[in-house]
Image (cartoon, rainbow, N blue to C red; front, side, top):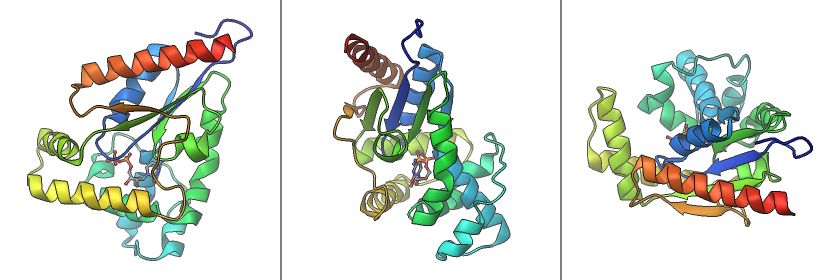
Length: 219
Ligand code: CDP
């Protein structure tokens, strides 16, 4: 990808829960040979710390304390458990928590070899200069189906109605919060994956990114 004086690309992938942004971001990283950061894991790691201590997610100072010593194993299944997901959604609304996690994400985005980051505010706050900004969406119903299958795949029992209600409340919290609300950057490319399977979603994302990178190179 990187041919001499052309700097390696930065790709931002944002979108709501279970929109397919994680799968797309991993595939783009693989396709372009770039390192990938799932920024949701940072918020989940803070939530897991807080949960293990028995801290109160309703108190910003306790959530901020849980940002210290943020070592975590990305494979830890507890990071993806329902209580931790819910706490992550709550504590990610705190400005001080977002600030505490910002430097780590920006350092990753600014590394020399380029990067792919996925989250909620990559294109708007963390890497507003990204070469490619994708905003991945799907209807809440489709996302609830996907999340349900994902939970069942991990041997967890869940009801569609509950998962859908959770998706709605997380969408609401993500898009209504005062800092870094979930919204597409003005120059983001929108990708609706409602009617696409994972392979088709990845194919569409690669095409959009390649086209955009060609345009960036030409300028
Ligand atoms: O894909 P899913 O919503 O299940 O989770 P995630 O991407 O792992 O993010 C976990 C939580 O962190 C979400 O509820 C978001 O509210 C929050 N988050 C955020 O606020 N900003 C980011 N850049 C990434 C995640």
